[in-house]
Image: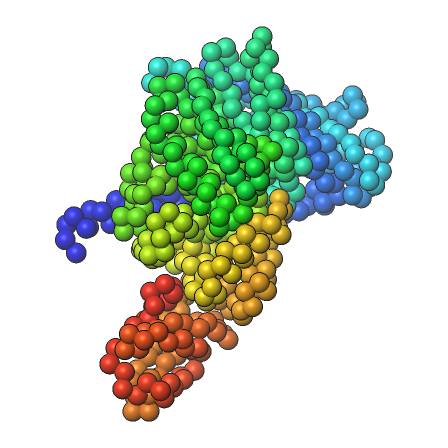
Length: 544
């Protein structure tokens, strides 16, 4: 490897490591707080979220927020104690229901509210949580979440939130578990004069006297997808003729970056065309689509996708695949927008299944290439990403303690899906499976098991051991073969018990499907094979 290639590899490896930094911080053990955050506790299970009204004032000069969140819920079972989450150093000032003060006790970030009113099954009730304080400041957003308190080049405040993994309760009180999405939400934010707040959904009202914006989200939204972005923003937009009709696509950027954004965001309608083709209609037409410039790299906030890729192609100007194809598009724009389908439309119930977000969305990058540049470009890109896979620990994490799996969920996840595409061996059927996922799990929270079973059912393939192999172990299947007098012998090693996965090989350049297992098999038709090559689209190793 010459010095130029070494430098490119090191640059890509460094960026890849930074990208997955938070994901690679494996906990040595779990605490009571992990369980309170990551499990469906009895104090969460008895009520179902219906509506939030988050109403706050943000004071950037003081790095301070204050306000309240109205939490409307449906009673599933009559209980008296309700769990609300809010992280220190923020403080709950009071909690009320029907104007009456409620008592609560706190266990770290979990707060247990004792209700006075009888909770009748089927009834809709509300509590109002008043809070204030200096929220955690993000050290290295979006991996280390909280508030980013920055300034633009003109010295004006440039503020944004990000909180995946850490939890939305780092900056606002809520039911901070992914299994229960609120049905709709109003986000009211007062900011200093001369600044604009942009949040999820559509702008319902702007109170110019107080400079308070009211953004309404009419679709279910996950907690970490809620965001506020505050800056000296200017706006431009376009209307995209999508599968469900006209779609408003709005862009909010710093005043000085307007012309750069107009050029860079030409990728946005190209993204929408590719992803509606592969995944089905954009899931939030009612709430529009937005790209919002922020002072960190970017994040998949629902209908308010944040962007900070410095107006460069690739990932901060680098190609994560090392093939050149990664420089054909703005990585952050494409990747974070892809999460509208996988993360925001289809959302994991437990962060242990985070691969459902990141694996499918990493895979969306090469489907973007497939749509606009062809299948060979797509194949080269996804294969190039394999250099970033560490196989350090399983892709699926530990359940019920808010613990994600390995950062390999990105690149290994995308290569798993690309391999399954080969097994399906029918691109239109494969497209319909991807579209079907987004239709049949529309606006739902899911488990890995649901996704696995759906893909196996719709493909007609036996995929359980394939999923077990790639998601639940660090082993990569090794395809072994040798030529003997009686023909081609082959098998898999380094596999889970009962592993079955057909594979496509080229014998004397002729395409052949084999069905290896852990036991040696013989293909007697190929006694005189001169060359044998495994199709590189399958994520396996090979040993002769």
